[in-house]
Length: 246
Length: 154
Image (tube, chains in turn cyan, red):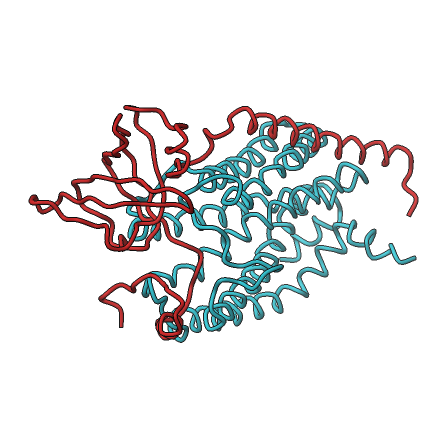
């Protein structure tokens, strides 16, 4: 009986209607969280002793980079659920993740590049961390392209899910690249097991930004999922009624 | 929860394919070995692992007190070190803003027979420590050295 919620989530119609109810709350929490985090990070938090004001780009860069990997794991896990349980909603979630994940990856690469120029003296180098993150961007592009290239929906779902699952190997590579090899990118400042090497006056706004980015991801994911549901079930009676009522 | 045999088969298939790809990539990494490192450390150079007269990168901390400016405004020489060994680096171009004594750097250039390293570009490598200026000051007054802050900071 405990599993009934899982199977209800599997109903596109139920999910479509429920997610419309969750949507305003998600926008509210994402908006206020991002507002508080940005004001705290960009104005209230102290500048870094060494980098000065430049360090503030971290409040965007770190959450974007973290989410770029988190979204990928969500995409791969829902792809796996889709394959194992033959669940259409799981494929829908997986396909809705890739454009958002690509956007986070792009944001992480751009903010890192803008930070790198004044800090390192270059916009880009092909070290292990930066290259692995670029590969992640191409995996997202590949996921979208593969799905769109196959006209049979079942095969497209399956092929895209397999790409997502296999590409998950890149996630630990991104994370550990700064430990396994010498790289220009610095090692992680945040770590759950040790004391973070970042002062608490900067850690708090950063943690708020990370949590808010996550809520923001869910808030953006739901409209993508609803669009995908409408497209996938476009011949279903309830979708026709839903569209006509608008 | 017991899985239906067919689902179990698909789940095992997924796990096996991830393990397969992971081990293939791990083998590639093992084969590439040190080539995946972005730079050589002074210890690796001391051990003769770096090629002579070919463009390579070296990385290390700038040893305080070793930075010497030449007659030409841009000429600069400094020593970098890791835990065990050090390396003399010659450079004559604009250094990055965050270049400081005690700072980590990555230099691109060629290693000469006599062990000097002539750099064509120098990048600053930032570390993972973030703290406000007051904390850095308190730490260095307490006898824990930090890098000297940028002058223009307040």
